Image (cartoon, rainbow, N blue to C red; front, side, top):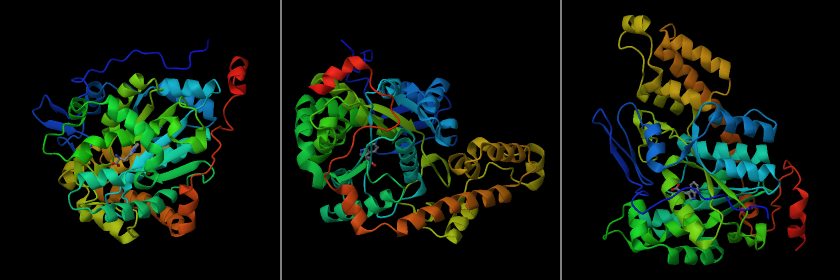
Length: 431
Ligand code: TRP
């Protein structure tokens, strides 16, 4: 019989799944990455260390080659530049595609603000690329409930409303209306609920505490929520797309801070005899003020919103972007810039498409020939171009579009780019 479940090799114990990866770095700086906060020293998050602590795997050259082979196009710049750098079971998902079994994509957003910022855009840009390159069905979860439980000040009505606005922002990334289902937990809960219950029964309070670090004064909603983020990882949560099939593999593009949710999900999937979801994980989009944090929606003057105009973008970068350039012109010309900590350069690695141009800028700036003012200008232009294009699409999104994307309707789960399934599984399909 064909092996339709990924072979087992990982072992996650309660202790090992401690998500609050709090580690003292050698230089005495602390880094803390949880599903709820990111803190690091001046040189930023040590991602190598994070991969080891979380127990994920590195994305390697062979993955890029495989993706290029399967999609027939150059892998996205986020892959080429190691911005999506970590994974779980990516090989399994790609193999599933290659052998005609396929997989689907799942991502999400917690609506904690009514406008998205550039950092929020990263997983959506990537998911849109994956959907297009592989021609895959995609489900997008709005965890309005999660934000209600986690943000004291937000009311129930408020999170739902912000979620609705966020759906428009998400549609504007250009997802395929034929292949994308967007849902709010509050609206879709009836369909999530069977898997939520199964999950909740299989999880102990100790499991949830171990993974998320909650204590006894945290509200009960926080404890019950992780099962809700887990449920879309299983294809039978979407009967209008997959029918009764519970074993269509799922790949979840995400920033690496979401790993605790899916580490937990994978652990419980085994108990429920479900396919474990795969993950493909990005680094954080750094704050303007430096690498020690990710961009956060709560600090308005140092956050670049997708609704900002060109002069706001320019101002924020000019005034607040942490520079890796020399302190004086003389020093800069002599020593050049430190690209690692230079925010304008780091932003270009996310948004400048042209690899040769990026290499040229790196060379010019690190040698001190290019000045901080110049790279800031290039950075502002590249980000403005992205945001202007985005805003054009956003202005065209209507309430009708929201209705279309959120409608519970049949969606073809197959990919036109997938090689046909080998014969031996044809019998199964007939059943
Ligand atoms: N918890 C995520 C947030 O706060 C939202 C989310 C739900 C998500 N499901 C996801 C993110 C799947 C990535 C992948 O934003």
